Image (cartoon, rainbow over all chains, first blue to last red; front, side, top):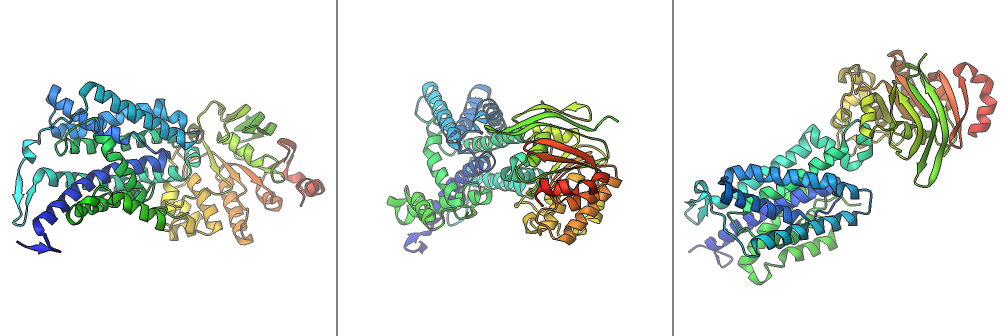
Length: 295
Length: 233
């Protein structure tokens, strides 16, 4: 058996894969948070709940309407995005003129309401989402068995993250978003409907959370608590990457996922806290985060 | 002649602070009007209130027959007004080209990119540089250029010469004369009335939130003494 640092290579690569899968969810979720924070200056505590609702839309769609996984991948982010747009337009937007704390408290309340509501209706235990047949096979790489369903999560997350990064950094719409982040009033004075831009941005962020939820459904169990289980780690990812930094959120998501996975191999006792230890070190050495701008 | 821009009894507030106390002014199509006044008299607030950036206001603002008072900020630009702020508002995360292309074209008749590059050759050379890497003069040109692209009929320019070298001020004066020849209407806020005298058709003098005097450029020489006293120069 091949060993690296005294660890069987299969175990190492297996945990690397787990780390990459977790990192894929961290990257997608922290990207959505970073997009929302970047433009709206709202720390969206409801992000975990939107991820959970995304997974439930896929599960209920399959159970009651027979909507397949591949359709749910598109439909669920659209539904969650549309409902979130309505929430932003009718409620969240009223808080922009107030202290940012109000936005945080509102989204925190929204998260608790959604989570409590889903727990009340569906109970706290997880429900399985069947792996689609087209993803329910694997490849023997010789040194390990690679489940295609797991590899798909990594590929889908990478594609979604790169697409959103390109949208923001390489298109005219993205330039408008970046400008509105710097000086929304001036951008509005140019004739651009910034309130609509804010609504669409919130919908995009929530839609990304829902997409992560659908991707997570066949990997983990669908449960009302799945959002609150992951959201604290995702906030740590955003802080390490740098609040509002798009590229920082994506790269840090994968990096910390891998760090967590490798810690499970080398020192399993620390795997639950390694991300927070890294966050503490980064905050001490570079408070703006690895990719954030100082000052 | 029906004025293109008509402001009557405009009052404006920043929070509890009452800044404009009944501003009344008119601007005809194709005219360049300059608002003179010392710092803190309400010149910038007048432009920001006309544009709709200052929302706590009363009175009447009409542009090309449209009432601007009830209009949301993003619609004001679409009505044909373009605002160039004193601080220029160049976006640090955008290149010169991205800054230039940012405001949408709101009406036909705006300058093409080629025309803008002919008018401001530096912007062509530095199109891929970050906007805030430009010199102060280049930033001012970029701030004006991006509005000229939109097809705005009336430009509101807030202290375009502030902090700029004489040679740049001269270049901006040339640009304003070119715009005037194209029939653009300009409302200019200036403290440098020597510069303003070379581009403006008419002047308003502002003091403590009201227009205290109005006169054509031909009367400027005769009012020099008063201006020196009022403007403290």
